[in-house]
Length: 238
Length: 307
Image (cartoon, rainbow over all chains, first blue to last red):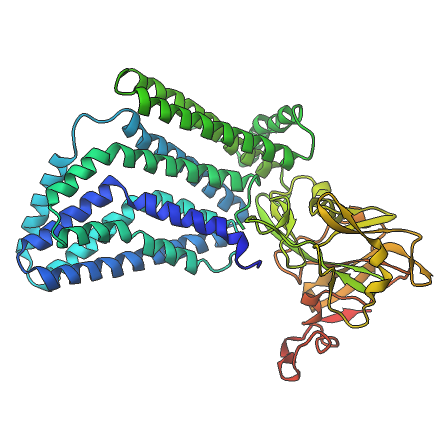
């Protein structure tokens, strides 16, 4: 019982954090962008599969390595340093959460289409220069790096939360997070492969962008507060 | 060039954050960690309600009154920042006053015995997975867990731990919360009939109560406690009887051993106990067999008790 129950709250936190953090307009936009580039190159079937395999493997590997490394760094540092580092992380998460949530309260007048179009053009040009599987591998690598960058703040807070518990090996939770952050990107990709139009997904994303920002911002604030509450002993996740 | 020594910096910070706990202490009772815990949760609950109200307000009226959006965001930013600053300041305050310099996870093995019967302490219910406070608790593992920033040693005593899990330990009485069934752990020579009259029902469930002067069979018994403390240098441990069990502060350690093994026992007065915690027993070179370690696995039984 001890091995399971105390960590249910932590398990819930990791699951919600991964799904909300990765369901961001940026990650969904990048999924549309990368998949449409691959589909646009004509030879769809195997290339799309390869792209998603490469994306999945890279993202899982990067994320797991980063999470495990951060966990052991927090553990190896003197307790005073770890406390202050985690405090700083909590504060940064809240500040970043406010910045993100501002986009819900105070939406930007412009859409991100212009930026996406510019990025798309550059990536397409780059993709044309390369040929064969190498293109797909490079695009998969870029997509996974971008996805990880988008979830990095919430991920580091989650790792810090895991480190505050009595878990000595974080691999299970870090691996769970790494698998969950694949899902939104893959879902969008599968929809596109299944025949859904790029414009349909882009319209949906633009229509729900402010809501996604709201949830993303609330998540960061909640994670920051959770970490700060853990640090001052008000709560214990296990 | 401006230079400032760390000590001077720390003194200044203590001056700033040192004023923080007394201000809080004026509003609530309890040790510093408890006070901070209560106020932190109150700040966060208040923050959550305010954030939800502001988001709801903007969702409903944001389209009709455009100025509502920026105004609500500013209000939300103020609420969130205030709660966050409170949480951060309380953490810094605790860390600066802590002897350990920050958050620690310490544990000690604790067993409760009465008239030769090992009592099974009430198991955790619900999702928290532990009995007690977030800082001081046990988690169905016969371990005293301290997860927090130690400031006041009074909050770390054996008495505080027993109180946190819903019991009581004084010089002449012991109260241990139990499950609704299965009051005793299986052990050789146990005689549950000797203590069945001590098991009572309270508003939170079953508990066992022992008072000095009551008997175990025909012998007068009393509440006693013993601590086994570990010597890392030579892999040995020593037992000593505690003069004031409730005030005993276990050794700071993140595992047991080297964390203490504490045996709280109601029985005839004696200077030593023959009871030993499982985590010590399975490593003891003379007793690991009694604790179920197979003959071919006794290489790890390297601990020795100094008598």
